[in-house]
Image 1: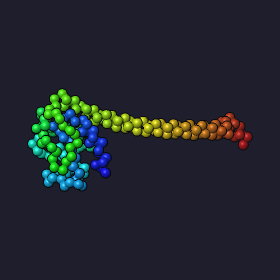
Image 2: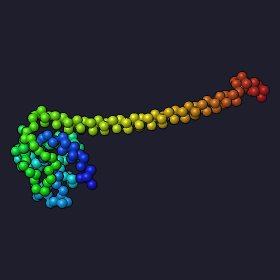
Image 3: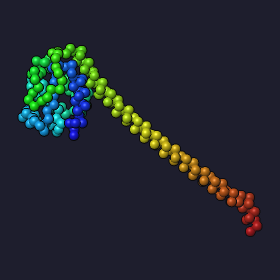
Image 4: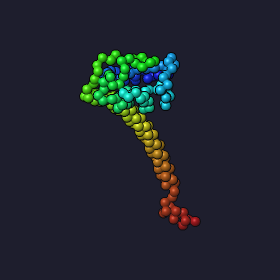
Length: 186
């Protein structure tokens, strides 16, 4: 389930990272291949790992978004990023290579552009979440305004009834002078 849901995310990460020749985006299906013993999965499946230039495996535990994955990769990639620094010529056992790599180095400017691209994706997602949150707030405010408008109308109607009753009551009550005449007659 989760692995299939993340396929578009992985494809987008591969697209963003395709210019970084020293980074290989690969997948390993642990239902078909036993993962090497070096894998110690902390977050559950699907697990995402980054192999550093010195051979360490870092598990990605952040949000499963393009921007978060790209930023994680770029934070942990060796400098300068080159094919010989980060990976052998073929993917590790049990992995399928997702991108064809032909270039050995990425300039600092290209790396910054890629990091910026990843951040733009994150910023766009954050912007969209903010827009949706604001729309929710506005819908809530519209509902509250409609509710308040109904309540004000109800109160106005109630006040009209009370005013009419007060006026009728005042008409039915004799004036002080009328009361004095009645008292004199008694």
